[in-house]
Amino acid sequence: TEGPRPDQLEPSNSSPEELLALAKAKLPAKPIFPFCFRNVALQSLNNPTQQVTNLTGRPYNLFCGVGSPASVLHSCQAFLGYPAQNFYSFPDHHNYTLPDLERLCAPGLDLLCTEKDAVKLCKLIASMPSEFTPGCSIWVLQLDVEFPAIANGLTFADWWENSFASIQDKL
Figure 1 (spheres, rainbow, N blue to C red):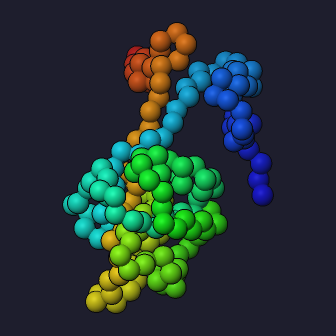
Figure 2: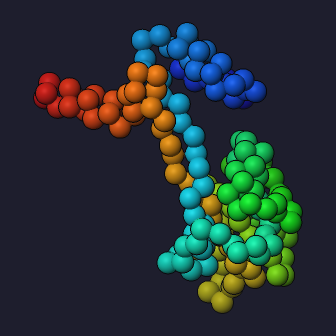
């Protein structure tokens, strides 16, 4: 497998402060903006117009095929406030099959996944005959990205606006 790009940091067990110091040392001339993902809602895959902020305590299965499945499990449980009945982790970039979906959908349980996995599920479901139904309610964890202000109070939005303005001035 390929290693990280020269401007990329490997995920580690380091604290945010240690990672920020490492980033500043590795990229001294670049602005460094820490960020985090946070779950903000659940979007129904069965009914795309439906969005909720919780499952009102209903049991659910969770699955993902991402590089850091533990972070998906942790963030989902923190967002909903209670654990999944079952957690299924697939390899990163997994192409889901009908047997996968049949195994994941359990009677009486909602099914939750990441936006990345929802894209692959949509392709699978679209390839099925029109009378096919998944057999469970599928919810997609909707993410937002937060950029806290850096030490001098500069936010990512401020930096971007200033950088974009300086580019426009040169045109």
